[in-house]
Image 1: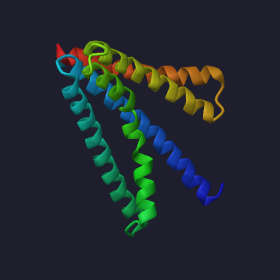
Image 2: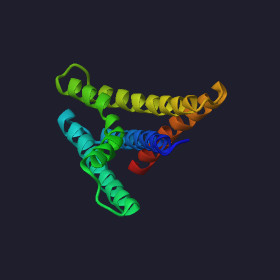
Image 3: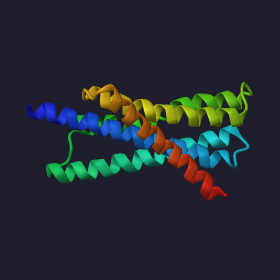
Image 4: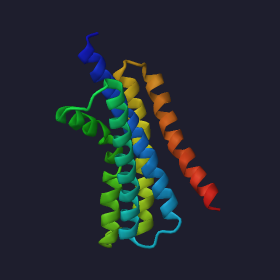
Length: 166
């Protein structure tokens, strides 16, 4: 394996990890906010605020780590790659944003938008786990198991939020 293939592989792994982190954060934020939400716009602002704080903090920490690893400041292209590699953190917010906008327009209820957003996040955790297992050639049983672990992670987050809120 060449140096470039190793770097590409590491970046692919990091993007997968970032997608999981983003999905867990979105799920946790939605569940916590659902207990008290009365306005779709406020829920949307809370969701985006949480995700943006995570993206900025994670990108900055990755930048600092990469500068330390390389022993020099990163070039413009290297910084761009680092930022691009952190975008999966924010990708998890897309579907909930659409659903919360629909709730804000009165097309669906806020409760339905939040419940559906949580369900989609759980399904995405399952799909992401199964996909990652598939990309490395794991047998179907392992793909399903890894997907179930991802979904279970989301369910644990939901359960913890509910328990802590009561």
